[in-house]
Image (tube, helix red, strand yellow):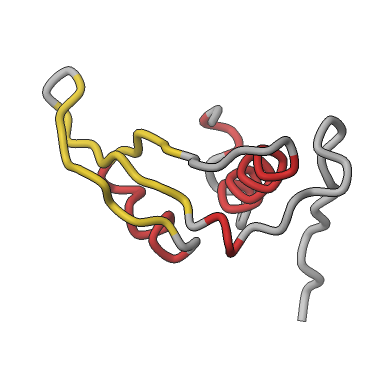
Length: 89
């Protein structure tokens, strides 16, 4: 994700949900990702499991697998879906 967008709340989670829901709609049976270790907690909160730990260029990563049961198929996988910002309280 580009540096300018890293501080926007829920953007990463929304992109993950879109990717997995779209893949699920297109018939995906297994969704794996190589995740930097500092992002592992976010993925765990989004119902991903660690498959293995490994290094890429000397940096620790996790290979993680999405629990597809938590990601209903997106009704428009080619177009995605709209994520609106939270309203201020």
